[in-house]
Image (cartoon, rainbow, N blue to C red; front, side):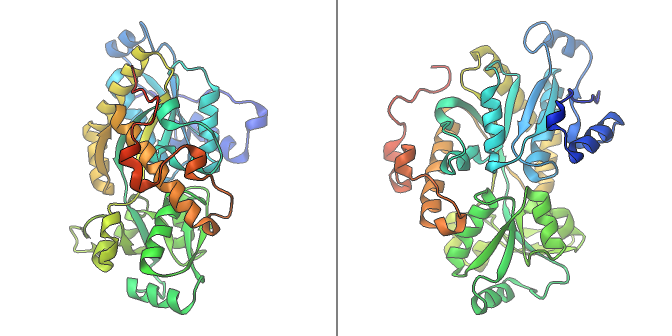
Length: 380
């Protein structure tokens, strides 16, 4: 594997963090700035047509978080499968809106892809873009993660019951970190808190990694995030899991058990599993032949032994969706988010778009609404 330094950026884009990331990349040590390439006959053959230059995956969240780590491995496995050079970069902000609008501003040639989560379902609801996923994007899903609430080893909250007791005695004082206001861990947190019957305070951070560290270091009482973001700290005992949003309890080989919220609060079972999905997205106007190659590379990456091993170790659920199945899920998730965010707008702290404004149905009417008028599957 050849590790290359990413292209230079303009001085207006240079930050202290980017400077040190680029320096470490030049020395060969930075995951945050690595590109992946495979040399040899397969790579030479691929250069005969498309692509004839590196393919960039623009990741919508910060380096080190769950989406970042997953999309980087997908990019690496795509490079191995096709002999391409794949360069991941991060453009966090606006719950994915900055990365989304950046990719939309680039030529529709397949060289700039969006490394996304949850089919971008928050971005239009929050008013950060007007782009409709099922009209403007070709969507691919690789798998899903499970939401998790964990506490530092020394926390006074020793169990789920301790947490509920504290929250009910002190409404709004239980603090939980999230990867950003309106993001997936915030959304799942609102759903769970509603089902449990407690009022909590969500504290936003810029990505899953800082949100996890906030709980570990005591900035918040609970680390919100995904099992995959907490698992290594859970294995070593630095964090203790209060619950996760899988459909059943997780049992480790050493005897540790992470309880499902469905076990603790049976009324939550219809919501499970709950967490984030990992998606690669490209502009729908990219030439069909290029779309076919990208889709093939993505499916090969998800089916690779290396990615399956990662999924197993981090408790991801692999589920590949492309074409109309992916479009339908994207629209359904956006309808659900629009409904939830409008019912709990005080939790979001900003005006959000209604389903009607977005041309979406009430979630209970979704199956009657799909496919929407004028919808055309990819390639039609």
